[in-house]
Image 1 (spheres, rainbow, N blue to C red):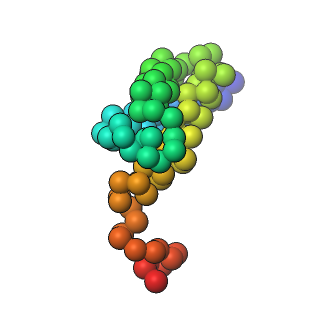
Image 2 (cartoon, helix red, strand yellow; image 1 turned 135 degrees about the vertical axis):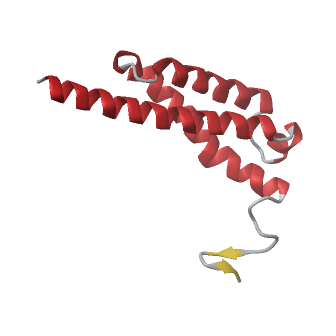
Length: 111
């Protein structure tokens, strides 16, 4: 039984460290962006996303390795960071000219 509990702890630790990394990545990316790009992309303000990603990183830090604290707050934190990275970041990249390569992109490069 003890080996199973140890294995579960390791899995929780690895998952929470990965989640914290994603949350910190979202926060750092948000800090580096221009405030006017958020409005131009049709997203909420930079301050809103700084709050979302900052709280997500804080909750991620609190829940690292703690299986009891992982629950709903940990899930909310990774969802907040995930929404930023999956929705807001690509829109900001498009507005600021990053990531597009300057032209239309197909799955294997420009067309």
